[in-house]
Structures are given as C-alpha cells and as structure tokens.
Length: 85
Image (tube, rainbow, N blue to C red; front, side, top):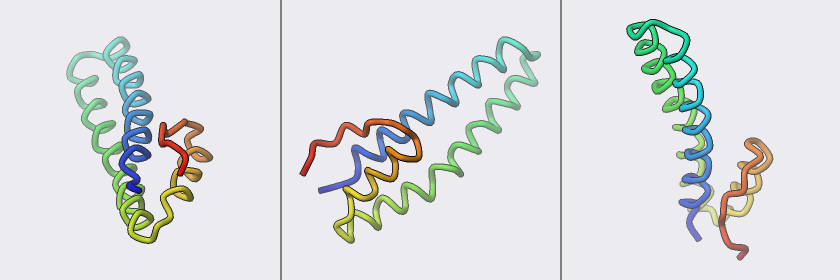
C-alpha cells in the first residue's frame, strides 16, 4: 500500500491553511507587500512538507504506511481518507 493518499491529504490541509493566510495578506497589505508574503509562505510550505514527503516514501518502502498515516492524523488532526488495510 502506498502513502500517496496520506501525502495528498497532508498537502491539501497545509495548502488550505496557506491559502487562508495568503488571503489575509491580500486584504491587509499593499499589493507588493502581499506578493512578498505570498512568496515567503509558498517557500515555507514547500520546506515544511519536503521532509514528511520523503519520510512517507521511506515508510512505504518499510511497509509502515499505517504508522505514517496515524502520525499525520495525530500531528495535523486530519483524516487521510485511506481505506483500512
């Protein structure tokens, strides 16, 4: 079983949080400032999600997808949508 659904759920969750913050920046800041904030948020999200994505691949190779799924649920409080094995 692959951890793809877990990674998608995690990225979707984090992207939604980022989008809310981007919208706040657009409403509160001058356009050039909002653009800077948006770019910084995008870079930060990429950095934050890189390692968990790599770990997902490792857990998949080791047959530990369920453990990874549980960890994502505990850390982010999201349902990954993966069917039980």
